[in-house]
Image (cartoon, rainbow, N blue to C red; front, side):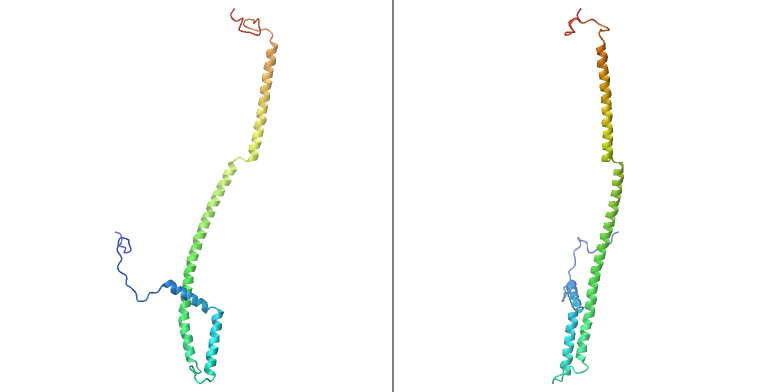
Length: 195
């Protein structure tokens, strides 16, 4: 017996709960990739270095209000917070890149399998064409055979001409008819037939 599948089209879906906060995973992932890309640039390192130098110089410089004295605990807390968010953002960006790489690898694998199948098909077709061309008549072979046939026809025509010339010559040698009535008027052979 088939299992009951809740996602069939004839089964109504239950009411979905509305979430208080709704996150679009793709939007969060895209933002994480932008932040991770910015963290990996020289521009970020330069600005971070400038901010640290200004922070330390303002707190050591002897101003009347040092908001972060020497061990710079507030600065360390800011860096810890930044690192706590940067690591998951970078991991999220890497995971998204890995997913894209998997899709690309799958598409490349499918494309290479299709290319291999097409190549094998073309190789088989080419082998078939080579076999068929081996059995086919080439232009030079056909021309040679036609020339042989033409010379054979010319010899046959010459023989026929010789035979017909011999027949005409032998008919001229006969001066008297061998059988039948003699025709008096050579212009009208049917005139003396009634005798």
